[in-house]
Image (tube, rainbow, N blue to C red):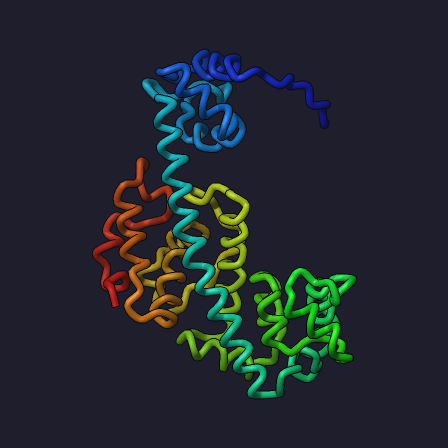
Length: 299
């Protein structure tokens, strides 16, 4: 049976006292209250939760000697991961958009997104919905000046694909790829040396991961709801148990970046970040020897 929410808000000092009552070593009062004020109790609770004593039946008491700084260090580590991921996911998103633009336009011209023949039977209505959402109700005053200029000067129902791709979200592009005809999907997938069904699942996972990062979600120990497919060639080195963890998402990114940016140092930056993780990396799905595996060798 549902119950009415009745927790009252607490002043910052009361929040600190509550943590101390639950066994957290709070240390410097001003230091703790500063971060409770500017990060927030609720956001920090997602990191503090890792240190809850599993033996506590009330699920509230902290493990012995757990410090506030432990959770803060974990928070900072997670933020560094998000920044690292957002940086590289931008490059992957742009590469996917460019490749799809090139493949689609060479196959069927600048307006290929408007041609139902390029998509699975009966599914183009979904594409039209995506494009209409992108243009909004007043395309002549669109937030992107190039869209507004085109719609002001041309009678076409939609701008050319390269303009639309620039304005579409990663999630929308992932959906367009999913609904495209097999020969188009495969041509795009070949650029990234992977089968089209695998790339479809990867784009869904990557766009979801990007949204988590963009909205400041916790990533270090997240169980991602979108499970990307693991190619046969990688099954021995990408643990199935890590399919919903950060490790496999990072492995996909590494694979993609080796095709997009020869000599990319992203994997080295990842190694440096994971090397100073304040928790056991197995919680993120990383094997203990992951950094020494040939797959992760710099290209």
